[in-house]
Image 1 (spheres, helix red, strand yellow):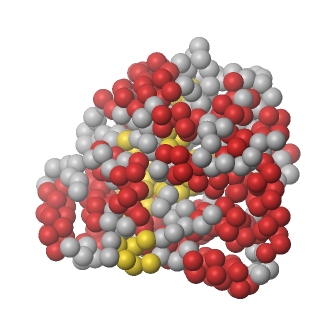
Image 2 (cartoon, helix red, strand yellow):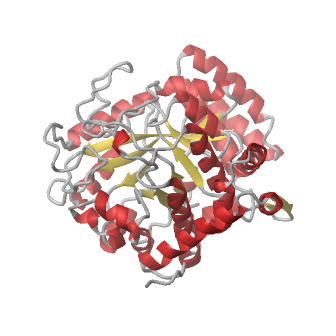
Length: 484
């Protein structure tokens, strides 16, 4: 029997089944221990130090106690602490991105995804480089600066060379004032050599969802294809970091397995990356299973309601305070609005989950024939940006840290002391100004200009405030791409 060891490179040791079961038993035994829960919450509170603001986070065991607790009063205290931590490290900024689906050819038989190879009803499509160009221009014309590229696993139709060609094409396109400044990559687990190629191509974050950390369930949900190999998939982030990629993004697909099991496994994976590589995940995504072409989510009996979902988000934020959290258009406007304050720091806007879903379609049109999942929030990017500002958030299109080399442990060292805000706040305002000048509707622009004026006053450093004001004036005069 495998023994739990977070420093091991073997999947069944750093994501250890018996350790998770023992964690769940421990959480059940203490979920009504009010004094212990109060102590855990107090231990996780941000503290001001000479270096800035520090936050210790929580172990997977302590965090699992919080998630198991259903006391309404203690839940509100969890939510309040999550908001405090979110504000300490991410302020009011919400980073914007969009997915770009390159190909839905896939050789796997994942039972929850319509791209599985046995699905004969979905048309198969792979973008040419000219079509990639058209999609990128359409995304640039919406105002996007950051993409997450997606492709099924198919070594013949989607080899690493194809992915690299697409990345080069995306970065090469400068249309009007548009430019994609960061390409994150969400493709299947691969080799160290291929991760080195992705690193050399200048990607941002490598994202790979575990789907489920429960090995027996994982193998049933992936009955055939390369993805069936649980160990190879689960150990992918270690290979990515060995290949030079120091920003990696974790995630599970909530609804496939019991959510408390997944939560513990997710945090154990984060602890493993921190222990072995000195830096935890750059992001954690929290998708829930959704209806798709031949996928009925009701056949999976582990779905979670919105209240449970909110508690998961809050507990992740408390446990891993420095990690970015992503929520996509899988979720409704109401659900996204609720969890923004509890920990989410990145959201998509105007998203299409079809291959070739942007070019040639108006904001009100969306093709459904190759969608990977139903989109719940179908608003345009302009509408999402305006909504965020009306809620008091700063929509950010910033990619400065990546482009300035502030990645991996360099980013985390700044984030862990709160110093990252000296860069992020003015950068968010400058990139928002670019969006307002180039892409926003008059109503959105009016709201945004007022927000920028007020937010400039909140930059504490006088020199930084003056420089940011100067840059924003230059953006109005037609110049672009300033950054701290």
